[in-house]
Image (tube, rainbow, N blue to C red; front, side, top):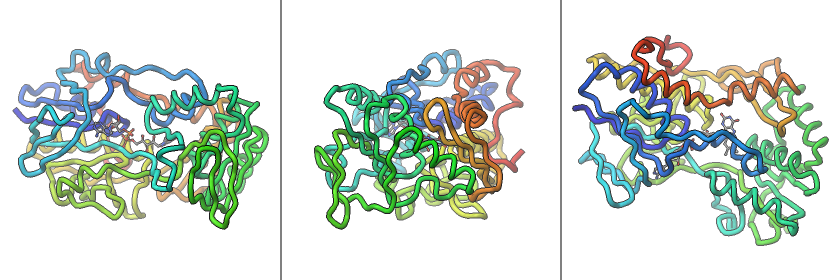
Length: 384
Ligand SMILES: Cc1cc2nc3c(=O)[nH]c(=O)nc-3n(C[C@H](O)[C@H](O)[C@H](O)COP(=O)(O)OP(=O)(O)OC[C@H]3O[C@@H](n4cnc5c(N)ncnc54)[C@H](O)[C@@H]3O)c2cc1C
């Protein structure tokens, strides 16, 4: 029996799972285990909607896995022994593997003093629900969203739209949408303005206090609620296990997405440092899901005695929601730099919703259905 253990049921982990299970369902010598702390899939790219008090779909992993033979282990991974090929879960269970898929994602980088204690993050559904509750507290009047990247933009716009009585400030080093083309950038700026989001770019946040945010140079911004979206960091587990990692702790992968130091470990999603000819992937669902699909395909190929193929990927778009009623989509070159085209307004809302909808109910049905073996997703645009 070849034991495949997949760590993390996020976008990348679930895509790896559906890809490998779909391709190996006719074999009886493969056992797949999925490890995740919750039996619900967290739609991380919709957590700003949860924070704004909007309902989102509920995906239960046991429903998706029913009839597939996949074992779901609920718990936190607390250690990996890459020599013995074991994984510790909750310091209680030990799982052995022949092939490991590491897909534990990333969390907000709260290294700035006070951020851990006083700021909300959108790392999981519980944090987002706590923030939602706090935003409806009558004492909450001002909200500072720290980080002017696209996550910060989505969070600020969603909160401002859902709670028009609150003062929402978006703070960060860069201009929101700085990497967009002129039309998309102008639409983003105008929408934030229409929603009443005050933008303060070019600021360095040095500390988060219970009632304000301190800025380099001595100024501060009063805030009843602080939301931290600036930067992400990854778990120290792979480095502690002796896997080769980059300066950000992400596992360095070979062309087939295997750890360069431990090729029996595939690494996908935000936790992987993946190089392409045009540069390095940055953590998004857009790239994370294809890495998962590719890893699943490669594992199936290896089980059939074939070599895995190299992963090839290029970005095509940056879709950004601006509340429920507006959005902007910047189309891009493979390296993420903007092309001339963008969608704005209602067409962008439709596009963003279409590309963001989680495919898991369909994946669950396909994993159970033997006739679908040939249609499993390939990771990367040029691997077909
Ligand atoms: C508010 C917000 C909006 C976003 N919007 C977009 C967007 O529009 N487009 C886009 O492409 N990206 C977006 N992103 C980024 C995107 O969500 C991430 O890039 C993506 O989730 C990464 O997928 P992943 O599978 O690597 O990790 P995740 O989706 O984070 O999944 C990791 C899984 O591993 C589990 N896990 C973590 N640690 C452990 C452990 N020790 N033991 C067991 N399980 C563990 C987690 O619970 C989770 O289930 C957004 C992020 C946020 C926060």
